[in-house]
Image: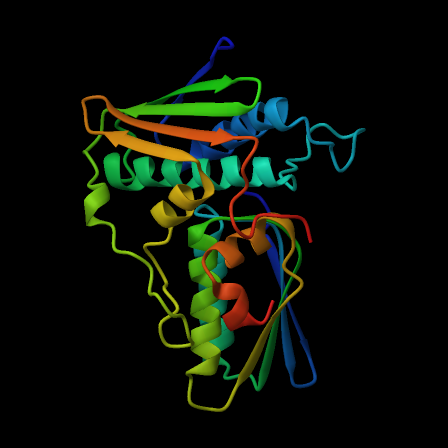
Amino acid sequence: MSKPPFEVQRINNETRLIVRGSLDINSAPVLAEEIDRIIAAKPPRVVADLSELDLIDSSGVAALVKLYKGIRNGGWGGAIEIQNARDQPLAIFKLLRMDKVFNL
Amino acid sequence: MAAPIRLTVPGTLRYRPIAVRVVAEAARLVSESARVDPNDPLVLDVRDPFDTSVVSAFMEIFNNIAIHAYQRSESGMIELSITPADRELVIELRDNGRPFSLEGVSPLPSALDDDSLPEGGMGIHIAKTMLDEMTYEPGPPNLWRLCKRLSTQPTGAGRS
């Protein structure tokens, strides 16, 4: 079993989700479980760092949308920022016109 | 037309990375893109816009076959024919699973905001937009034909 392509760091009030490698239909379900845990903790601020993400497909996008909506619409005033998308992942966000929503 | 590269893999997600890697290397034959690390040929590097488009589209169609045609079962194979030419790449995928209805795919919302962000139904849209041509013929075998030409790039595909 390969290592999950993500890491969660909690520093003070910030929860930082670092996503690495390929976020796709094979790895997104594992991340989605972690996203459920992040949302359940009702963090005041979440940062999804995509600087080490090389490849994403629609399943990976769906997982990040789930995180974004879960924090923004959770009702406790949580904030989320998606940062540092580049190359193929950024192209996918632009194609789907999500770059504007995510402020990428 | 160059000779096609042929590969047959089980139509499950477990074999997807193998197929993606072959397609990425075939795209590189056309784009002649430089590797991020010339000393490490095993790194899957799709930063070039052409490679980005080809691999992004292919991943979505492979997902579609594994999930919709073969219903996540181990019941069938995917036959790939990948033809790198001078300035284009043609990929054909054949499967013997359930036919897919391209007409049944809903368009993405015309305006996106926090509430309308889609959590599904994006795969076919990604593939179609990334390619110059995408056709589907129900079978058996079902046939997806994907074509990407070097001279054009999709909106938004680029280095950052």
